[in-house]
Length: 407
Ligand SMILES: [Zn+2]
Image (cartoon, rainbow, N blue to C red; front, side):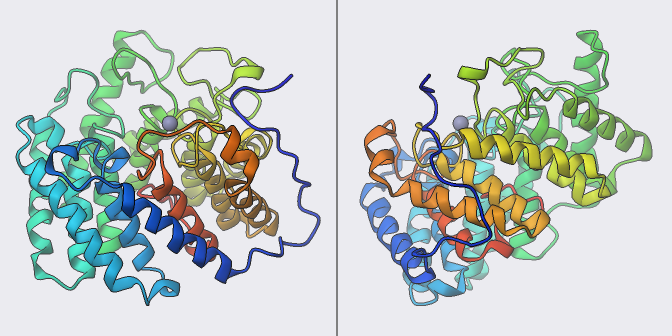
């Protein structure tokens, strides 16, 4: 039976040789051409800045910054960075005027992400002005520290506290300076843990930490438990031993929620094989990053096995019909192979990433995939695809955009 969510993967699997015909020059040309296409579509008006890094223009600025950091694009670097500055400056003006301070504190959908990218772009351009957006970012700490700062759920990645921690992690990695004090980070982590404990207690869960977003108990990377735990692990050295214990118990709890190498979008749901979500946002391609992080910290083989299992499912069902993006598209699937390549060094995963890259430019994909509204965007559109193609050129440095486990 035809699967309505994904194309059948007709590629032969790895037999010891990488793909030929995908030399670096060809990929570089594809990146440059795709960026041209994106820049024709990205809105430049102050009134069109909605969506933040997720599907707003700000995500395009991040992509341009990311490409400009790759030595293979040194000739394009200046133009890309200047364009990134133009784009992000409009988003900064937009979010400075945002009345809702909670939206200013949102990572992927609001101000925190925009200020973070502005700081990165300014720093890359050598402008001392990078301190301005960085200060605005730091000041948002106060907004997201109170335990119930959002009614819809205060802890998830897109608008909640985990997102703020994630942005701080990316900023520290890219700017190579301390962003928040250890006490500030500890306070945010403590709020996340306390909030999860309270929720689990109220709902009489048999495990220690749980969260909901608009009333749904999500498990995946987008609004769910996995990315919240991933952020707590990313700062685990700042937690008390008791807190760390709760986090690891929750990691193992989530590992046990696996059903045939996948996770349901929400806690307790049964996965229907023919209709399962294999997306970064919901499912194995996003949850894999939590177990990658867990494995990098304590080297327990079951965590790596869980990632490998996710990769097998993605090879089967990851040629998604929802477009080229990283949230629920082909590039998001392919990033799992780059993750596995970095974890294992096994060339099989490079090969699989190359095949998915090839598929992105095939007629079958062009004809059979859904059209995407914000085709320029980082998470749903081509900007995420560009980041993936650049990472195909530098697999040892590859990282899912704004969501690295190697920091
Ligand atoms: Zn998605």
